[in-house]
Length: 196
Image 1 (cartoon, rainbow, N blue to C red):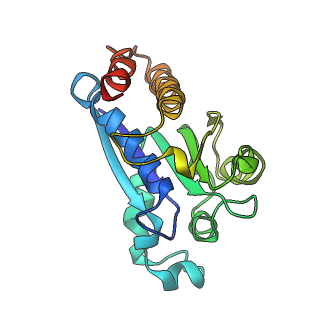
Image 2 (cartoon, one colour):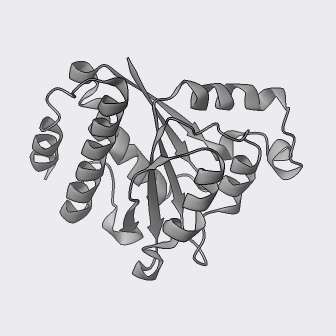
């Protein structure tokens, strides 16, 4: 079974970035029957603030999040962008992870912002950190402006198509790593057009 972990780095809930992550999950869940995908979600805001603030690397509360990461074949990691950077909350969490924890995993970053000026923020702020944690398969990030995201069933068609294409790349990369071919992957596109 393929395991995908969604990591939400926003300190706010609900928020546009959470809608974006939920939309990715919604599209993937429609594949879970045919592709045998298990999807877990980790919202960093739900972790103990003291562990993040004081850098408690060996906190028992971090055991389960680290286990989820270790067991995942792929990780979708999302963050709102402010001042051209991902959130401090997400940075605090990533700082507590052991080096090489993202090795051999396919990573898909998703970003949101109130302005299109932050389109490439993850490319130069988040990706170097992911590489420090062992990531070698980082897919191009998908960016959305906040007002393009309404809810899981009413997101902008352009965003839906770009997210679908990124998820296809994610599934293909996982399949390549596992030495298999994804079945019915084109049905993701069918699902998007059915929603819109």
